[in-house]
Amino acid sequence: MRACKLLLILLLLSSSTVFAEKKIKIAVIPKSTHPWWLKMKAGAQKAAQEQNAQIFWISPETEDQVEKQIEFMNGLIDKTDGIVLAPLDTEKLVASVEKAMAQKKPVAIVDAMINTSKTTSFLATDNKKAGAVAAAEMAKALTTKIQPKTKPKVAIYRFIKGIQTTDDRALGFEEAAAKLQQFEIIREDFYAGTTEVTSINEATRLLKKYPDLKGIFAVNWPSFENLYRAVKKTGSAGKIKLVGIDEPEACLDGIRKGEVSAVIMQDPFNMGYLGVKAVVNALKNKPVEKHIDTGTVVITAENIDSPEIKKALKPKSE
Image (tube, rainbow, N blue to C red; front, side, top):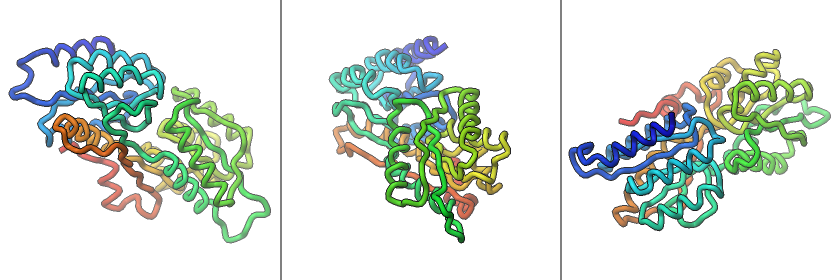
């Protein structure tokens, strides 16, 4: 299916009749087909409209399909003017990125770093900072009028081993917790994995093994969403403080119900928007910042229904 989609895109790119006027052709390659990435697509589309560009969106199904990303990169380098890439691996995509840059095809890296300096720009959440913000929100959520005799125990619900973005969030959370000295992080790692079944099962195992947990930090959308499902399934909703990065609809609803303490929302729209602009500016020999922090927003019960949060949750490409 993905091979067919790549072939279709290549046919469109090779056709001289596709464009009524000369447009900059930019491939945008996210990490998966997960709905979170559609916000990045909306941002890329908005920038394309403003910059007289055409984007070609193609993605692997899940975040463990690195070889698919490499296939897409190599197939699109010669057919496009530039690429926006959210890499699934820090090493395996280096050759493809450097090949594109050597051919004067700008490559904007978004969301996760790659181990080469030969890129146009890196645009992403400061993940360690996001983890630190999550730790501060956890500390607030755990604050009580009566000081407990022992520090409350908190777990980190991780995603997949070796994913830099989520590893950095966990590290930022740990470092901030050490400075705050308001809760204790259990020293056992639990990984959600890429499927709903494994994620819910592992979250359930965590909850059963540590019944005295007072809080859990989830490092991304799937781990957060499935953790919340497991918490509700085991009857722990409202008893354990939940803080997570990204904004599954169920977790936003959990804020309104008092079952989720805080959501740390990234800005994938900005990643797509600024990523496409970086490629266009590079092609026009305009200045491009080498590193751009796309920022985060904290959502709690106090601000979830504010106009600013509503706009951030549902960005429009037009």
